[in-house]
Amino acid sequence: MDKKVLKNLSYGVYVVTSSYNKKNAGCTLNSVMQITSNPITIAISINHDNNTNKIISYSNLFAISILKETSDPKIIGEFGFKTSKDTNKFKNVEYKLIENIPIILDSCGYIICKVIDKLETNSHTIFIGEVIKADGFTSDKPMTYKYYQEKLKGLTSKNAPTYQKEEQINEKSNNKKRRWKCKICGYVYEADELPKDFICPICGQPHTEFYEVTN
Ligand code: FE
Image 1: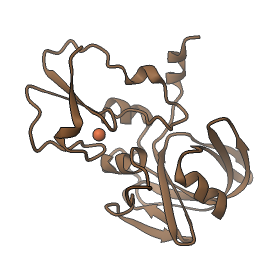
Image 2: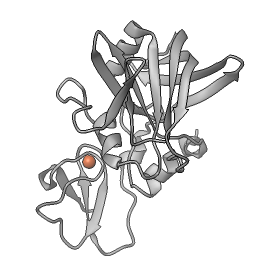
Image 3: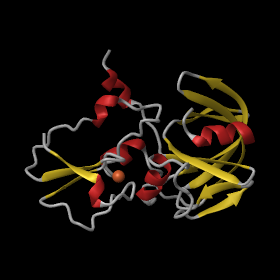
């Protein structure tokens, strides 16, 4: 099987949030798709290990904030490569509560769904939701997954439904510059030196969390 073919499937970049008993949860997600138009229903796929999965199961509500190309990439890092066990993901992100669910403001807009069904797989829950509210903030271009990978040089979290192990292996660069890779999110920085004040643009880690790629 040539798993590389799967990389031709197209996705967007979203933050899926939920809230239960005033506990907010959220994670970056690429697997969001509309499945019917009347009523409007949407399916999302979330790893069992994500706290957001648990909170959606309790609240039966989830919101999708649609990131735009100009959204701060740190949002992807905060919600995609950190766990709410040791960090408050909402601390440095602007949001407002709609239907008591936090909505990311630096986005194209949001869609709120009520869970009407779910399906368990080995690793992920597929939640099917009926749209109960939706609104746009801007007509800026939504961020596609390709844009995230190619322009922002972001990698796929191990919890993502589309994760492939091989992706984490660096392709050889023709470029003579040295390369450092973030241990947390996989972002690669190319330069002659890694500056001491360098901060990962995706996940916010300091230069000490980078290692030099030698292949
Ligand atoms: Fe990083």
